[in-house]
Each structure stands twice: as structure tokens, then as C-alpha cells.
Length: 450
Image (cartoon, rainbow, N blue to C red):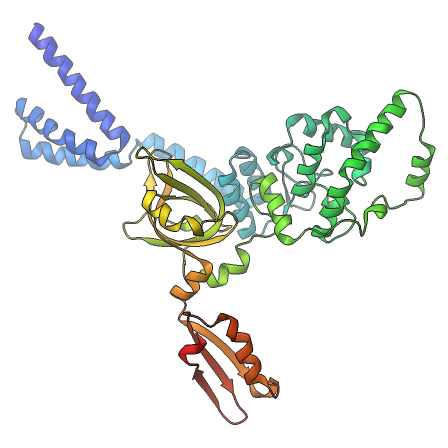
């Protein structure tokens, strides 16, 4: 009886180990269970070859399988969500964006999906936005204030409450005056300006100029709001302030010409720091047409493969950590607007390329892309890496210049030589496609002009 119980417990343990190996979906674990299964089958008079055929079916099922009712449930949910996405695209995408509001990697993919679907995406707006993503009267998806880094639930509730009491905010000074001052501070205001939440009530249409002026107003707007609150508490009325409002005097007039406009890079970096992604543009845009000849696959479409793949993107984050052997390894996050992917550089590779790795710069990498079972996502191990300048030399066959004789000046040859002179190095071949009056030709410039 004790022997039977012991044997029974042993069988239970073996079944548990097999189920565990199936659950982890690890081929090496299943391989270990193969011989155990064969021996167990033979011990109860089941043919060994038949047992292996059964095991093969079990192993195949272990790759990815579930019962019919589970499949049916998934099919129903898939049909319902596809129907909603087809007939109510904007509300559907607003709901999806809200559900993953704190996951920047997912937001990047969903924002790109909105663009591909032709949906308008409105930046955070103090006069439109709620906590989550919503749809406005014109059918555009409005960014949720809850997705803005540096703006918590308290300030968002105060903004919505202030909007209920005054209607629409007219400018940044009116905004600060209408909000509970205990919920606002300089850090929150800076985040709102940088993400574009005041663009609609800014001083002008140019985003770089408008955000620079708004940023310069923050301190005075908060001081004016604080003084207004103190006056109200003391029962005092600011007659001059009311006169200014009635006369529609431009509140930004005193700040114009006193602040430097933000560059496109400052504007986009402000969005990345507050929203986690670029919205009004993307640094990758100016390179995309060129880079797609080197790295053809968008990050959003990358799949695991046994062969190395070329990827390209802007470095949006860099993490360097110590290895067990005392060296350094790095994890880069590349962003090509379609999506993001983490790429790893182990010690030797990182030491080789570390000087080329700069945040906010474009990189082209050759990497082995695998499925990371630990994070349930794709990961890539870098084999080679190039800056955009190096990639041009490595992958471009040459530089082609198109010339029409009717548009050339008398000293054009000298001007061309002076133009190319600073760049003449061990680079790519230069061709001239020349259109003459009666003929055309493709001329190859000498080795000195590479």
C-alpha cells in the first residue's frame, strides 16, 4: 500500500512537471519531459512509438492552444471591437488610449494608428480636455490631461471645476485667476505649456513663438492670481483689472519681443518630456524617406527572426547598467514614430559603440530580434551600429546631382568645387546628371570628390 501511494505521488509530480513545462512554453523543458513520458507509457504497457506520437501532439498544443469555448469567446470580442472601430473610430480610439494612458510605449503605437486612420488628434487643451481621452464635437480625439506627466489629479480636477464656473478660459492670466490657487504651482504650469495645453488661447498661431511667450508669462500669471485671491479675501476690488478686461487689452503685449522663440527641437522635446512622445512633429520625419532605404521595416512591423535585421530610430532613452563581470551594458529605446523597441548592447558591443550613442540622435542598428518571454515583448541584441553619417557612407551607392545648363551661372564649376570641398573625404561616389542643350550625360566625378 505504501509503495502504491508513493508511486501515485510520483505520477502526480510528473504530471505537474509536464504541465509546468507546457505552461512556460519552453522547448528545452519539453525536451526533458519527452523521455520521462516515454518511460511512463511503457511502464503501463503502452507502445513507446505511439507514446511519442501522442507526445508530439501535446508538444504542438503546448506552443499555443486553448479549448473551443475560449476560442469562441475571443472571436466574439474580436468581432465586437472590430465593429466598434469601423463604425465609431474616434470614440473607440479614445477608449483604447484611455485604457493604456500610463503606458507610453502603447500610446506611441495608438497615436500612430490614429494618424493612419485619418483621425485628428488634439493636443491637451485646458478648454477641452478631461482626465481621459475624449472626442470633441468635430470628431477629433482630444488628449487627456491625465496623460500629461507632472500634472496630477488635483490640478486636473481644479481645471475642470474652474471651467464649469467660468466657461472658457480666455488667456493664461484668466486661467490662473479662475483656478483654485492651492492646486497650481510653477511646475504644473510649465508642464501644461510644454505639452501644448494653452496653444488654443496663446498669443499667436506659431507654436514655437506662442509657447515661448506663455512660458515667460507663468510667474507673473501666478503672482497676479495670488494677488487677486488675497484681494478677494480682503473684500478689495481691482478696478484697473476689470477695466483692462472690458477694453480687451492683449495680456501678452508686454512680453512680446522680450523672449526668444522656441526652436522646433525645444518644442518637440517639451512634448516628449510631458507626454512621453512627439505629437506636433517627430525628429525622425526629416530622415524617414532616406532611412527607409537602409532599414525598410518600421519598428511597429518588426517580427522576431533568425537572421539579423536593420532598424532605425531616434534614441529616446538610454540606460547603462553594470554586469556581473564588472563591465557595462546598455539598453536603448529607439522610436521611429510608428513604435518603440528596446535594443541591448552587451559589454563588448557597448564599449565599441558608446561614443556614437546620444539621446535624441538618430541611429541605424543591425540587430538580432527575438521574443522576450520575460517581458512578453520583442527585444533586440545589437550586432552593429551606425550614426546617420556613417550609414550614408555604408549603404548609399552615391550622391547624384541633377544639373540643367539653362540654370547654371558662368562660374558654376568653381562654385560646385567650393561646395563639395569641405566634404571631400573617404565617402560615396558623386555623379552629375547633366542636361545640355542638345544632349544629356551622366558624369562620374573623380576619387578626390568623394
